[in-house]
Figure 1 (cartoon, one colour):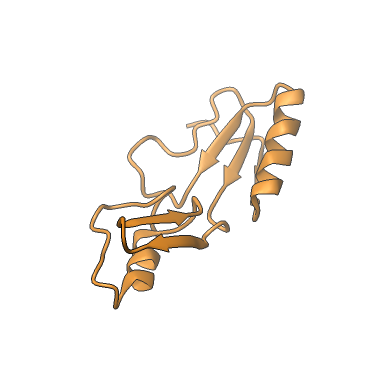
Figure 2 (cartoon, rainbow, N blue to C red):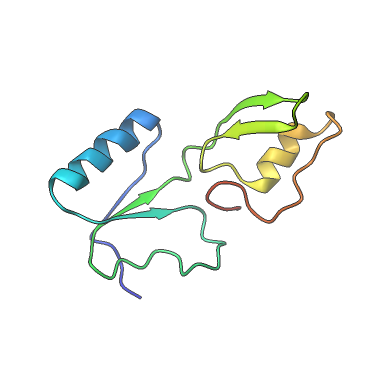
Length: 102
């Protein structure tokens, strides 16, 4: 396991865009991170880089009951989404949403 050189906690799409542009210009790898429940290996910055911890981007943006769709930011957990959906007759049974679950 190789830790990143730095960790950032963006809170808006604009911050993600600015940080990604900076990493691109400086040829620095970007390593996205959710809440750490995935099976993909987590943060493994084998070439260094900046970890983008998306856990603070946890807003539920739009719900359409008609087509059973919901737009969420990458830090939304399954538990938070199901709490939001309570009372609508819908639920999300899969283990994670976006970047993971707390």
